Length: 451
Image (cartoon, rainbow, N blue to C red; front, side):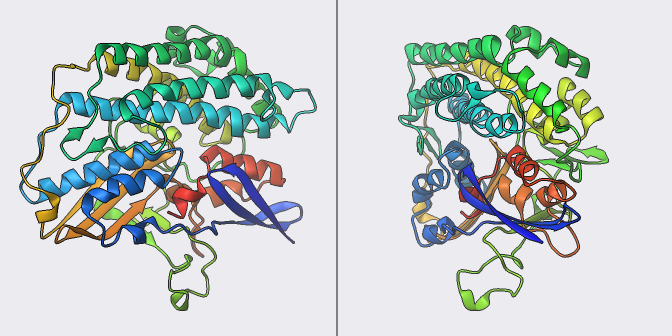
């Protein structure tokens, strides 16, 4: 028997096709059917046009696409021997902008996607989390909306900002601007303390053992209670292989497959499109069923995202939870919400480090329009995990642009020999509701997957 369910309340939509054997999911296929084509749109465009196009790949993680694009273009300068000077101020403002975007997304994801699905499993009344009308849903939405205003101060707007350019940024915040950003984040920290975790911020950050889950109150306690009631600490487990490509003040690159390795070579990343539709339909493989590709590192599927970042970074609290519950739905959600706290703390610190007397932008000595042929690559840690951009320019124009998103790492189509990360996590479960919750734990983004 097969069932087909539409996965909604994500960026775009996807189909979850499950095969059943004795009421257990024996096979799962995630179909992404809405092709978008940004990589094709960029061909023939001026190199700097990518700074306007790529932030529009996704309405949730546009900052991540912008930062990866600008760093890929700056990598072109480095590869032709014209390494640019980027001031510390510009680097800080870029990282701050990306962090705020991730903070905003983590809040929305927990309240708008995770909690409505999990509370639906309970017989008790959790209408406070009901979409569009629940008190907690509405408050979290308001807090996220206020938080993102701090990004608009330096980005000029949100979403789809384009304030990062090769050589720096085109914003010059005042002390009042920076103070306003701090105030927005202070309000978010207050929400974290009073509503979300129910404990003082500094106390939460000191947690290092799984037993300290008992100290948590508020909405995160509701999540934990419902998780254990519905065995979410036992489901959603995949390969327990993790990869982090980008680095920042908070994140460290590396991979773990039984042992930790911090040195990565991007040349070991491979994309495969055997199960992927081709823009020229006559070239479609007989096995193609969607627009998602497979991506592997050294021929193995790896999970990417907040859980992977916590493990590679060796963050004590999540490391201890992971030691007991592995890469389950419960662990994956806890890792992302724990990251929220650390992002808030780190971002407040970064704002304090901005020196407004520094230059925001130092103009490159040559224009990309004058570059005959060169390639650039960059990676950053986006909301959902590692994001990679590769750009090739010839005679100042983009001749090829390639994007590998976190969703492709986690939700690819798999192959006949190996299941993708999400497929492995879903197969073996006994209900479509749990299968969808497992997908939610990876944070499905159809528009990024079918970029």
